[in-house]
Amino acid sequence: MATTRLPSAGFSITIRIGVMADASSIGRLTTCVGEAGAIVTALDVVDSDPTTVVVDLTCDTADANHADQVVKALEALEGVDVRKVSDRTFLLHLGGKIEVTPKVALRNRDELSRAYTPGVARVCLAIAENPADARRLTIKRNTVAVVSDGSAVLGLGNLGPAASLPVMEGKAALFKRFGGVDAWPVVLDTQDTDEIVRIVQAIAPAYGGINLEDIAAPRCFEIEERLRDLLDIPVFHDDQHGTAICVLAALTNALRVVGKRLEDVRVVVSGAGAAGTAIMKLLLRQGVGDILAYDRPGVLHAGLQDLPAPWQWLVENTNRDGYQGDLRGALRGADVFIGVSAPNLLTGDDIATMAEGAIVFALANPDPEVDPREARKHAAVVATGRSDQPNQINNVLAFPGVFRGMLDAHAEAFTEEMAIAAAQAIADVVGQDKINPTVIVPSVFDPRVAVAVAAAVRAAAQSGAAVAAADTSAP
Image 1 (cartoon, rainbow, N blue to C red):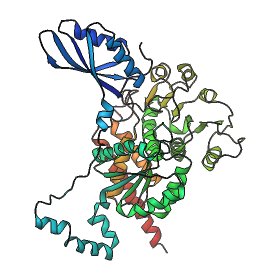
Image 2 (image 1 turned 135 degrees about the vertical axis):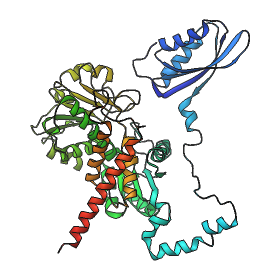
Image 3 (image 1 turned 90 degrees about the vertical axis):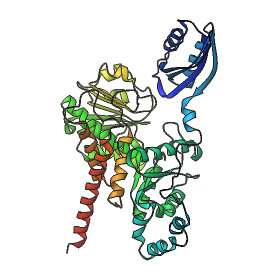
Image 4 (image 1 turned 90 degrees about the horizontal axis):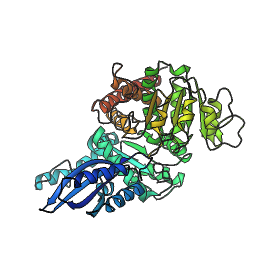
Protein backbone atom coordinates (compact mmCIF):
# COMPACT_ATOMS: atom_id res chain seq x y z
CA MET A 1 0.00 0.00 0.00
CA ALA A 2 2.84 2.43 0.78
CA THR A 3 3.79 4.87 -2.00
CA THR A 4 7.35 5.42 -3.26
CA ARG A 5 6.57 9.08 -3.97
CA LEU A 6 7.11 11.79 -1.39
CA PRO A 7 4.05 13.02 0.52
CA SER A 8 3.50 16.76 0.29
CA ALA A 9 1.35 19.46 1.88
CA GLY A 10 0.08 20.10 -1.65
CA PHE A 11 -1.93 16.88 -1.34
CA SER A 12 -2.99 17.30 2.27
CA ILE A 13 -6.40 15.94 3.24
CA THR A 14 -8.52 16.11 6.37
CA ILE A 15 -10.62 13.03 7.12
CA ARG A 16 -13.48 13.18 9.60
CA ILE A 17 -13.73 9.79 11.29
CA GLY A 18 -15.98 8.26 13.93
CA VAL A 19 -14.36 5.53 16.05
CA MET A 20 -15.17 3.60 19.20
CA ALA A 21 -14.17 5.39 22.41
CA ASP A 22 -11.49 2.99 23.56
CA ALA A 23 -7.82 3.47 24.33
CA SER A 24 -6.50 1.89 21.12
CA SER A 25 -8.75 3.48 18.48
CA ILE A 26 -6.74 6.63 17.80
CA GLY A 27 -3.49 4.69 17.62
CA ARG A 28 -5.02 2.32 15.06
CA LEU A 29 -5.90 5.29 12.85
CA THR A 30 -2.44 6.86 12.87
CA THR A 31 -0.76 3.48 12.39
CA CYS A 32 -2.98 2.74 9.38
CA VAL A 33 -2.19 6.11 7.78
CA GLY A 34 1.54 5.64 8.35
CA GLU A 35 1.52 2.14 6.86
CA ALA A 36 -0.25 3.57 3.80
CA GLY A 37 2.73 5.89 3.23
CA ALA A 38 1.12 9.16 4.36
CA ILE A 39 2.30 11.54 7.10
CA VAL A 40 -0.06 12.52 9.90
CA THR A 41 0.25 16.26 10.56
CA ALA A 42 -2.69 16.86 12.92
CA LEU A 43 -5.36 15.00 14.84
CA ASP A 44 -8.17 16.93 16.52
CA VAL A 45 -11.13 15.67 18.55
CA VAL A 46 -14.29 17.44 17.31
CA ASP A 47 -16.99 15.54 19.25
CA SER A 48 -17.46 12.66 21.63
CA ASP A 49 -19.99 10.75 23.70
CA PRO A 50 -19.65 7.75 26.04
CA THR A 51 -19.24 5.28 23.14
CA THR A 52 -17.87 7.26 20.18
CA VAL A 53 -15.14 9.79 19.38
CA VAL A 54 -15.21 11.93 16.22
CA VAL A 55 -11.80 13.14 15.06
CA ASP A 56 -10.39 15.17 12.17
CA LEU A 57 -7.23 13.44 10.99
CA THR A 58 -5.05 15.55 8.69
CA CYS A 59 -2.27 13.96 6.66
CA ASP A 60 0.02 14.67 3.74
CA THR A 61 -0.24 12.31 0.78
CA ALA A 62 1.74 11.97 -2.46
CA ASP A 63 -1.05 12.59 -4.99
CA ALA A 64 -4.81 12.23 -5.47
CA ASN A 65 -4.63 8.48 -6.04
CA HIS A 66 -2.56 8.02 -2.91
CA ALA A 67 -5.11 10.05 -0.94
CA ASP A 68 -7.84 7.69 -2.13
CA GLN A 69 -5.74 4.72 -1.04
CA VAL A 70 -5.31 6.17 2.43
CA VAL A 71 -9.07 6.72 2.79
CA LYS A 72 -9.83 3.18 1.61
CA ALA A 73 -7.33 1.76 4.11
CA LEU A 74 -9.10 3.61 6.93
CA GLU A 75 -12.52 2.49 5.72
CA ALA A 76 -11.33 -1.12 5.84
CA LEU A 77 -10.61 -0.90 9.58
CA GLU A 78 -13.21 -2.48 11.82
CA GLY A 79 -15.28 0.00 13.81
CA VAL A 80 -14.16 3.01 11.75
CA ASP A 81 -16.72 5.33 10.13
CA VAL A 82 -15.18 7.66 7.54
CA ARG A 83 -17.71 10.49 7.36
CA LYS A 84 -16.10 13.16 5.19
CA VAL A 85 -12.89 13.79 3.25
CA SER A 86 -11.76 17.36 2.55
CA ASP A 87 -8.98 18.31 0.14
CA ARG A 88 -7.25 21.15 1.99
CA THR A 89 -5.71 22.60 -1.17
CA PHE A 90 -9.11 23.01 -2.86
CA LEU A 91 -10.55 24.49 0.34
CA LEU A 92 -7.79 27.13 0.36
CA HIS A 93 -8.64 28.16 -3.22
CA LEU A 94 -12.40 28.57 -2.73
CA GLY A 95 -13.33 32.04 -3.96
CA GLY A 96 -9.75 32.83 -4.96
CA LYS A 97 -6.75 33.86 -2.87
CA ILE A 98 -6.52 37.65 -3.30
CA GLU A 99 -8.76 40.70 -3.04
CA VAL A 100 -8.64 44.48 -3.48
CA THR A 101 -8.59 46.50 -0.26
CA PRO A 102 -8.90 50.33 -0.42
CA LYS A 103 -6.12 52.33 1.25
CA VAL A 104 -8.53 55.17 2.06
CA ALA A 105 -11.53 54.82 4.36
CA LEU A 106 -14.19 56.86 2.45
CA ARG A 107 -16.10 57.38 5.68
CA ASN A 108 -17.87 60.61 4.73
CA ARG A 109 -18.70 63.01 1.91
CA ASP A 110 -15.54 65.03 2.50
CA GLU A 111 -13.25 62.02 1.92
CA LEU A 112 -15.32 60.90 -1.06
CA SER A 113 -14.98 64.33 -2.67
CA ARG A 114 -11.19 64.14 -2.46
CA ALA A 115 -10.76 60.49 -3.44
CA TYR A 116 -13.25 60.74 -6.29
CA THR A 117 -15.14 63.55 -7.97
CA PRO A 118 -14.67 66.49 -7.94
CA GLY A 119 -11.23 66.43 -6.28
CA VAL A 120 -9.80 63.62 -8.39
CA ALA A 121 -10.08 65.76 -11.52
CA ARG A 122 -7.21 67.94 -10.32
CA VAL A 123 -4.97 64.89 -10.01
CA CYS A 124 -5.94 63.72 -13.51
CA LEU A 125 -4.99 67.10 -14.95
CA ALA A 126 -1.66 67.08 -13.11
CA ILE A 127 -0.77 63.69 -14.62
CA ALA A 128 -1.90 64.80 -18.08
CA GLU A 129 0.50 67.74 -17.81
CA ASN A 130 3.33 65.61 -16.43
CA PRO A 131 2.85 61.84 -17.12
CA ALA A 132 5.80 60.94 -14.87
CA ASP A 133 3.63 61.96 -11.91
CA ALA A 134 1.63 58.74 -12.41
CA ARG A 135 4.35 56.90 -10.47
CA ARG A 136 3.85 59.28 -7.57
CA LEU A 137 0.09 59.81 -7.56
CA THR A 138 -1.36 56.41 -8.58
CA ILE A 139 -1.02 52.71 -7.90
CA LYS A 140 1.58 52.55 -10.67
CA ARG A 141 4.36 53.17 -8.13
CA ASN A 142 3.77 49.78 -6.47
CA THR A 143 1.78 47.62 -8.89
CA VAL A 144 2.84 44.75 -11.13
CA ALA A 145 0.86 42.86 -13.77
CA VAL A 146 1.30 39.08 -13.62
CA VAL A 147 0.69 38.16 -17.26
CA SER A 148 0.11 34.66 -18.65
CA ASP A 149 -1.47 32.98 -21.65
CA GLY A 150 -1.63 29.62 -19.85
CA SER A 151 0.56 27.89 -22.42
CA ALA A 152 3.05 26.40 -19.95
CA VAL A 153 1.38 26.18 -16.55
CA LEU A 154 3.85 24.81 -14.00
CA GLY A 155 4.90 21.44 -15.42
CA LEU A 156 1.37 20.64 -16.55
CA GLY A 157 1.47 22.00 -20.11
CA ASN A 158 -0.88 24.15 -22.15
CA LEU A 159 -3.93 24.47 -19.87
CA GLY A 160 -5.16 27.84 -21.10
CA PRO A 161 -5.84 31.13 -19.30
CA ALA A 162 -8.64 30.09 -16.91
CA ALA A 163 -6.66 27.12 -15.58
CA SER A 164 -3.59 29.33 -15.13
CA LEU A 165 -5.48 31.77 -12.90
CA PRO A 166 -4.87 29.89 -9.59
CA VAL A 167 -1.12 30.10 -10.23
CA MET A 168 -1.26 33.80 -11.08
CA GLU A 169 -3.35 34.49 -7.96
CA GLY A 170 -0.77 32.67 -5.89
CA LYS A 171 2.00 34.69 -7.50
CA ALA A 172 0.18 37.91 -6.65
CA ALA A 173 -0.23 36.78 -3.04
CA LEU A 174 3.51 36.03 -2.82
CA PHE A 175 4.38 39.46 -4.22
CA LYS A 176 2.39 41.08 -1.42
CA ARG A 177 3.49 38.75 1.37
CA PHE A 178 7.21 38.87 0.70
CA GLY A 179 7.78 42.14 -1.16
CA GLY A 180 4.91 44.42 -0.21
CA VAL A 181 4.15 44.69 -3.94
CA ASP A 182 0.57 44.95 -5.20
CA ALA A 183 0.27 42.49 -8.09
CA TRP A 184 -2.73 41.45 -10.16
CA PRO A 185 -3.30 38.46 -12.47
CA VAL A 186 -3.79 39.28 -16.14
CA VAL A 187 -4.61 36.05 -17.99
CA LEU A 188 -5.01 36.39 -21.75
CA ASP A 189 -7.29 34.34 -23.98
CA THR A 190 -4.79 34.31 -26.82
CA GLN A 191 -1.49 32.61 -27.55
CA ASP A 192 -0.64 34.79 -30.52
CA THR A 193 2.68 36.55 -29.95
CA ASP A 194 1.73 39.79 -31.70
CA GLU A 195 -1.56 40.01 -29.84
CA ILE A 196 0.03 39.35 -26.45
CA VAL A 197 2.62 42.05 -27.07
CA ARG A 198 -0.04 44.53 -28.14
CA ILE A 199 -2.32 43.80 -25.15
CA VAL A 200 0.47 44.15 -22.62
CA GLN A 201 1.66 47.35 -24.27
CA ALA A 202 -1.88 48.70 -24.06
CA ILE A 203 -2.36 47.97 -20.35
CA ALA A 204 1.16 48.97 -19.28
CA PRO A 205 0.30 52.57 -18.23
CA ALA A 206 -1.38 51.22 -15.07
CA TYR A 207 1.65 49.24 -13.90
CA GLY A 208 5.15 49.83 -12.62
CA GLY A 209 6.37 46.46 -13.91
CA ILE A 210 5.36 43.41 -15.96
CA ASN A 211 5.94 39.88 -14.68
CA LEU A 212 5.52 37.33 -17.49
CA GLU A 213 4.55 33.90 -16.22
CA ASP A 214 3.97 30.40 -17.64
CA ILE A 215 4.34 31.37 -21.31
CA ALA A 216 5.82 28.57 -23.41
CA ALA A 217 9.23 28.72 -25.04
CA PRO A 218 10.33 29.85 -27.54
CA ARG A 219 7.51 32.44 -27.80
CA CYS A 220 8.31 33.74 -24.32
CA PHE A 221 11.73 34.93 -25.51
CA GLU A 222 10.30 37.03 -28.35
CA ILE A 223 7.47 38.41 -26.20
CA GLU A 224 9.88 39.53 -23.50
CA GLU A 225 12.37 41.03 -25.93
CA ARG A 226 9.73 43.00 -27.83
CA LEU A 227 8.06 44.30 -24.68
CA ARG A 228 11.41 45.45 -23.30
CA ASP A 229 11.92 47.52 -26.44
CA LEU A 230 8.40 48.98 -26.28
CA LEU A 231 7.93 49.77 -22.58
CA ASP A 232 9.55 52.15 -20.12
CA ILE A 233 8.92 49.81 -17.17
CA PRO A 234 10.76 46.57 -16.25
CA VAL A 235 9.67 43.37 -18.00
CA PHE A 236 10.68 40.26 -16.08
CA HIS A 237 9.95 36.66 -17.09
CA ASP A 238 10.08 34.84 -13.77
CA ASP A 239 10.30 31.38 -15.30
CA GLN A 240 13.57 32.55 -16.85
CA HIS A 241 15.18 35.15 -14.66
CA GLY A 242 13.72 34.29 -11.26
CA THR A 243 14.82 30.68 -11.64
CA ALA A 244 18.26 31.69 -12.92
CA ILE A 245 18.83 34.06 -10.00
CA CYS A 246 17.91 31.41 -7.43
CA VAL A 247 20.02 28.72 -9.10
CA LEU A 248 23.06 31.01 -9.25
CA ALA A 249 22.60 31.89 -5.57
CA ALA A 250 22.29 28.23 -4.56
CA LEU A 251 25.21 27.17 -6.74
CA THR A 252 27.41 29.91 -5.28
CA ASN A 253 26.98 28.44 -1.81
CA ALA A 254 27.04 24.81 -2.96
CA LEU A 255 30.43 25.40 -4.57
CA ARG A 256 31.63 26.91 -1.30
CA VAL A 257 30.56 23.71 0.48
CA VAL A 258 32.48 21.41 -1.87
CA GLY A 259 35.45 23.75 -2.33
CA LYS A 260 35.19 24.23 -6.07
CA ARG A 261 35.22 27.35 -8.27
CA LEU A 262 32.59 28.13 -10.89
CA GLU A 263 35.22 28.59 -13.59
CA ASP A 264 36.52 25.04 -12.98
CA VAL A 265 33.28 23.04 -13.05
CA ARG A 266 31.39 21.24 -15.80
CA VAL A 267 27.63 21.66 -15.54
CA VAL A 268 24.95 19.50 -17.16
CA VAL A 269 21.56 21.17 -17.58
CA SER A 270 18.51 19.05 -18.39
CA GLY A 271 15.90 21.23 -20.05
CA ALA A 272 16.79 23.95 -22.56
CA GLY A 273 13.49 25.79 -22.31
CA ALA A 274 12.87 29.17 -20.72
CA ALA A 275 14.31 28.36 -17.30
CA GLY A 276 17.22 26.26 -18.52
CA THR A 277 18.29 28.80 -21.13
CA ALA A 278 18.24 31.66 -18.64
CA ILE A 279 20.21 29.62 -16.10
CA MET A 280 22.86 28.78 -18.67
CA LYS A 281 23.15 32.37 -19.90
CA LEU A 282 23.64 33.66 -16.37
CA LEU A 283 26.21 30.97 -15.54
CA LEU A 284 28.09 31.74 -18.76
CA ARG A 285 28.00 35.42 -17.88
CA GLN A 286 29.66 34.50 -14.58
CA GLY A 287 32.41 32.47 -16.26
CA VAL A 288 31.36 28.84 -15.70
CA GLY A 289 33.89 26.28 -16.92
CA ASP A 290 31.62 24.47 -19.39
CA ILE A 291 27.96 23.56 -19.83
CA LEU A 292 26.24 20.69 -21.60
CA ALA A 293 22.63 21.46 -22.49
CA TYR A 294 20.29 18.47 -22.79
CA ASP A 295 16.80 18.46 -24.33
CA ARG A 296 14.70 16.36 -26.69
CA PRO A 297 17.40 15.97 -29.41
CA GLY A 298 19.95 14.92 -26.78
CA VAL A 299 22.88 17.07 -25.72
CA LEU A 300 22.95 20.12 -27.99
CA HIS A 301 25.99 20.13 -30.29
CA ALA A 302 27.18 21.66 -33.53
CA GLY A 303 26.07 18.73 -35.68
CA LEU A 304 22.37 19.33 -35.10
CA GLN A 305 20.43 21.02 -37.90
CA ASP A 306 17.45 23.40 -38.11
CA LEU A 307 17.51 24.36 -34.45
CA PRO A 308 15.38 27.24 -33.10
CA ALA A 309 17.35 30.42 -32.45
CA PRO A 310 17.68 29.97 -28.64
CA TRP A 311 19.08 26.46 -29.09
CA GLN A 312 21.42 27.62 -31.85
CA TRP A 313 22.80 30.21 -29.43
CA LEU A 314 23.40 27.45 -26.87
CA VAL A 315 25.14 25.30 -29.48
CA GLU A 316 27.53 28.19 -30.16
CA ASN A 317 28.25 28.91 -26.49
CA THR A 318 28.21 25.53 -24.69
CA ASN A 319 29.57 21.97 -25.03
CA ARG A 320 33.17 22.99 -25.55
CA ASP A 321 34.32 19.45 -26.40
CA GLY A 322 31.47 18.66 -28.80
CA TYR A 323 29.95 15.78 -26.81
CA GLN A 324 27.20 13.93 -28.69
CA GLY A 325 25.03 11.62 -26.67
CA ASP A 326 22.42 11.19 -23.96
CA LEU A 327 21.94 12.66 -20.52
CA ARG A 328 23.46 9.74 -18.63
CA GLY A 329 26.61 9.92 -20.71
CA ALA A 330 26.86 13.67 -20.21
CA LEU A 331 26.73 13.19 -16.43
CA ARG A 332 29.85 11.04 -16.25
CA GLY A 333 32.50 13.10 -14.51
CA ALA A 334 30.31 16.22 -14.35
CA ASP A 335 30.54 18.43 -11.28
CA VAL A 336 27.01 19.82 -11.32
CA PHE A 337 23.60 18.62 -12.53
CA ILE A 338 20.77 21.14 -12.89
CA GLY A 339 17.37 19.74 -13.86
CA VAL A 340 14.53 21.97 -15.03
CA SER A 341 12.79 19.39 -17.16
CA ALA A 342 10.81 16.26 -16.29
CA PRO A 343 10.51 13.76 -13.41
CA ASN A 344 12.40 10.52 -12.91
CA LEU A 345 14.96 10.87 -15.71
CA LEU A 346 17.83 9.61 -13.57
CA THR A 347 18.64 7.11 -10.83
CA GLY A 348 21.04 7.17 -7.94
CA ASP A 349 23.41 5.02 -10.02
CA ASP A 350 23.57 7.79 -12.63
CA ILE A 351 24.50 10.32 -9.96
CA ALA A 352 27.24 7.96 -8.78
CA THR A 353 29.07 8.48 -12.11
CA MET A 354 29.51 12.21 -11.45
CA ALA A 355 32.73 13.74 -10.11
CA GLU A 356 33.61 13.67 -6.43
CA GLY A 357 31.80 16.38 -4.53
CA ALA A 358 28.93 16.35 -7.01
CA ILE A 359 26.14 18.93 -6.80
CA VAL A 360 22.60 17.97 -7.86
CA PHE A 361 19.79 20.48 -8.35
CA ALA A 362 16.76 18.38 -9.41
CA LEU A 363 14.12 21.09 -9.76
CA ALA A 364 11.25 19.50 -11.70
CA ASN A 365 8.05 19.87 -9.66
CA PRO A 366 6.36 18.16 -7.99
CA ASP A 367 8.54 15.15 -8.83
CA PRO A 368 12.24 15.86 -9.46
CA GLU A 369 14.48 14.39 -12.16
CA VAL A 370 15.97 12.03 -9.58
CA ASP A 371 14.70 10.91 -6.21
CA PRO A 372 16.56 13.19 -3.77
CA ARG A 373 16.88 10.34 -1.29
CA GLU A 374 18.82 8.32 -3.87
CA ALA A 375 20.82 11.33 -5.07
CA ARG A 376 22.02 12.08 -1.53
CA LYS A 377 23.71 8.67 -1.38
CA HIS A 378 26.20 9.83 -4.02
CA ALA A 379 26.16 13.65 -4.24
CA ALA A 380 27.65 16.08 -1.73
CA VAL A 381 24.86 18.64 -2.11
CA VAL A 382 21.29 17.99 -3.28
CA ALA A 383 18.56 20.57 -3.83
CA THR A 384 15.02 20.37 -5.19
CA GLY A 385 12.06 22.67 -5.70
CA ARG A 386 10.09 20.92 -2.97
CA SER A 387 9.23 22.53 0.35
CA ASP A 388 9.45 19.21 2.20
CA GLN A 389 13.13 18.65 1.30
CA PRO A 390 16.30 20.47 2.39
CA ASN A 391 17.64 23.19 0.09
CA GLN A 392 14.42 24.27 -1.58
CA ILE A 393 15.26 26.42 -4.61
CA ASN A 394 12.13 28.51 -4.97
CA ASN A 395 11.64 31.63 -7.09
CA VAL A 396 9.95 33.37 -4.17
CA LEU A 397 13.49 33.97 -2.90
CA ALA A 398 14.00 36.30 -5.86
CA PHE A 399 11.04 37.94 -7.56
CA PRO A 400 9.42 39.85 -4.64
CA GLY A 401 12.70 41.52 -3.74
CA VAL A 402 13.69 42.07 -7.37
CA PHE A 403 10.47 43.95 -8.10
CA ARG A 404 10.58 45.78 -4.76
CA GLY A 405 14.03 47.09 -5.69
CA MET A 406 13.08 47.99 -9.27
CA LEU A 407 9.91 49.79 -8.19
CA ASP A 408 11.73 51.72 -5.48
CA ALA A 409 14.39 52.78 -8.00
CA HIS A 410 11.79 53.69 -10.65
CA ALA A 411 13.76 51.37 -12.94
CA GLU A 412 12.80 51.32 -16.60
CA ALA A 413 14.29 47.88 -17.37
CA PHE A 414 15.51 44.69 -15.73
CA THR A 415 19.19 44.03 -16.37
CA GLU A 416 21.67 41.20 -16.03
CA GLU A 417 23.56 43.25 -13.44
CA MET A 418 20.41 43.27 -11.29
CA ALA A 419 20.14 39.48 -11.63
CA ILE A 420 23.73 38.96 -10.48
CA ALA A 421 23.28 41.40 -7.59
CA ALA A 422 20.10 39.62 -6.49
CA ALA A 423 21.76 36.19 -6.63
CA GLN A 424 24.70 37.39 -4.57
CA ALA A 425 22.34 38.92 -2.01
CA ILE A 426 20.41 35.67 -1.62
CA ALA A 427 23.62 33.65 -1.22
CA ASP A 428 25.03 36.08 1.33
CA VAL A 429 21.91 35.97 3.52
CA VAL A 430 22.86 32.43 4.52
CA GLY A 431 26.26 33.59 5.75
CA GLN A 432 29.65 31.93 5.25
CA ASP A 433 29.52 30.55 8.79
CA LYS A 434 26.10 28.92 8.30
CA ILE A 435 26.31 27.11 4.96
CA ASN A 436 26.54 23.33 4.91
CA PRO A 437 25.31 20.54 2.58
CA THR A 438 21.71 20.96 3.79
CA VAL A 439 21.69 24.78 3.99
CA ILE A 440 22.80 26.50 0.78
CA VAL A 441 19.85 28.89 0.46
CA PRO A 442 17.89 30.79 3.09
CA SER A 443 14.34 29.89 4.02
CA VAL A 444 11.68 31.53 1.88
CA PHE A 445 10.27 32.84 5.17
CA ASP A 446 13.52 34.49 6.23
CA PRO A 447 12.54 38.19 6.49
CA ARG A 448 16.05 39.29 5.51
CA VAL A 449 15.84 37.88 1.99
CA ALA A 450 13.48 40.28 0.22
CA VAL A 451 15.06 43.25 2.01
CA ALA A 452 18.56 42.24 0.94
CA VAL A 453 17.53 41.48 -2.65
CA ALA A 454 15.61 44.75 -2.94
CA ALA A 455 18.59 46.74 -1.67
CA ALA A 456 20.97 44.99 -4.08
CA VAL A 457 18.69 45.46 -7.07
CA ARG A 458 18.01 49.08 -6.17
CA ALA A 459 21.75 49.76 -5.97
CA ALA A 460 22.34 48.01 -9.31
CA ALA A 461 19.50 49.99 -10.92
CA GLN A 462 20.81 53.30 -9.60
CA SER A 463 24.36 52.44 -10.66
CA GLY A 464 23.12 51.55 -14.13
CA ALA A 465 21.14 54.77 -14.36
CA ALA A 466 24.19 56.76 -13.32
CA VAL A 467 26.33 55.08 -15.98
CA ALA A 468 23.65 55.69 -18.62
CA ALA A 469 23.42 59.35 -17.63
CA ALA A 470 27.19 59.70 -17.83
CA ASP A 471 27.26 58.10 -21.27
CA THR A 472 24.50 60.42 -22.44
CA SER A 473 26.30 63.53 -21.21
CA ALA A 474 29.68 62.51 -22.60
CA PRO A 475 30.91 64.56 -25.59
